[in-house]
Length: 577
Image (cartoon, rainbow, N blue to C red; front, side):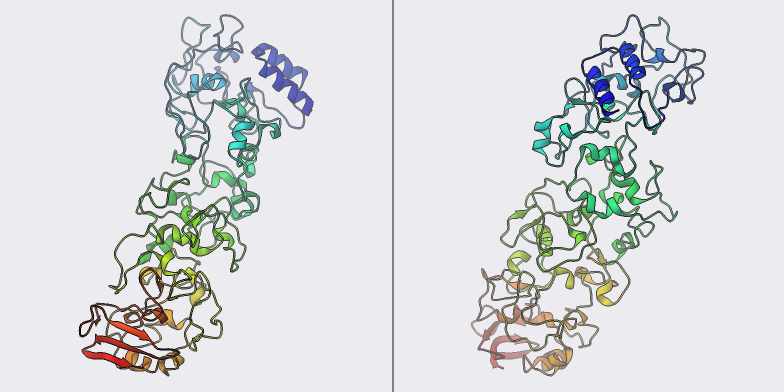
C-alpha cells in the first residue's frame, strides 16, 4: 500500500491531469480505511449535495472544479478562474522562510474559499450556475483574502528549511499522507484531500493528538510535555476550551488546545485568541486543569499579564522590548511537565524557558529559576524602588551577585558563616529560590491548597507572606511572617546574632526593612565593612549625623559593629554593639 501511495504522489508531482489521477485512484485504491466519495461530501455542490450550500438545479458533481474541455491552464482540468487577488499572508518572527503569494493548488482552493469568485462561476458554462449561496463568505471555511490568520502555504519545504529550524521535520521523513507539489512547496493539498472527507475537514490524516501537525512540527520536549500527555477533561462550565474540535481531553486536542490552523483568533502563531493569556485561561481556570490559575490574577499583587497585548515575541530582546509579562515569559507550553526542581535544574513547570544568566548572558533554556526572573528583574528593570535606600539598585542580578558584600543566597550560598537564627530546614550552605519569598499567599508554601507560583498574592510585591515595611509597626509573627519563615523568631528576639534586635524590633517598633535590604547590595556600590548582613538603610527613617553625608554602619567582626546615624530621634555617633 505504501508503494501505491508513493506512486500516486509521483504521478501528481509530474503534473498528471485530473482524469489520469482519478484513474490512478481506481488502479491504486486506498486500503485500511473506508474512503468517502466526494459525492458524499460538502464538496458535492450539485443540487443533490448533502451540504446547505448547493446548486438550485445543476445535477453534475465534478463540474464545480473540473471540466474535460476548455479547462483553465493551471492544470488538472481546472474549471474555475484563477483568483487575481493580492492576499495578506501569514507572517511571524519564528518563520524561517519567506511567505509569498499563494501558488499552485492553493490558488485553486482559494477560487472558492477566498469569497471573491461566485461558487457557480465555472469556465465551461456561459451562464453562472445558480446556487443557494452565491459566495463562500461566511463560516469557518471562508478564508477570505486575509490569510494572516491561516497556516502559511506555497513555500518551499525542503531539507534546507528543515536544517534552518530543528523543530521542522525533514521532508524526507514525511509519511505518505503529506504531499508537497512538484516544486516542493507546501500547499493546501498537503493537509487536505478535496475528494475525501472521511476524517472531517477533508484532512489527509486524523489530527487527534495533533498527528497531522506533528508530521511537520517536532517541537522540542513535546512528547513528554503535560499538554501532550494529559487526559484531563472539561467539566462543562463555560467557556468551552475546545470550541472548534470534537475532542474531549487535553492530549486529544494537543496543538489545538492553543492553536487553530485556519481563521485563528490571534494571527501571530495562529493562537486561538488574540490576547495571549486568553489562550491559557480556558483550561487553567479550574475547569480542565485542577488548579485555578486565572483567579490568582484578581488578587492585590499580580504579575500583570493583562496589562499588555501583542508585545511579547519569542525572538524579543529583553533589554530593548517594552516592559511586559505574559504566561509564556515564564512557561513554555510545548515543554511544561511535572518533574520536580533541583538546585541545578528548574522544575518541569519552567522547562524550556529562556532566561538571563548571572553574568547577564541570554540563555536558550534556563537551568535556574532566577534566570527566568532576570529577564525582567535584572538589566531591564525599570520603575521606582519601593523603599528609599541609601544604595539604590533595581537590578536583581547585581544584587544577588556572589561577589557582593552580602546577599540572600539565591545564586549560591551566602557570605555570612554565622547565622544562628536559621530554622532547622536551612543552614549557611543553603540556596533558596525567588519563589521562596515571591509566591501565592494561599499556596503550599503557607499550607494552603492554592496553585504554586508568583501569579498573584494578597501581599504587595507578590510576597508569599506578610512583610511590613512601615515604621512604627509593632512586632508580631504575623507582621514579619516572611522573615520568620526562615529565621527563628525566638532567636531574633533573644538577640543571638545582634544584641539589640529586641530593642529595635519590639522596643522601637522598627521593621526589619529599616536596616536590611532583602535582596542584596551590589559590590559596585557597597563594601564588606559597611554593607555586610544586608545593611542598606531606609533613608525615610534613618539619617546621617555630623559631617557624614550618609548614615554609616561599620562591621567590626562576628556579632560586632557600630553605627553613625540618627534614627527615631536618637543620635548614634557612634553606637557600638
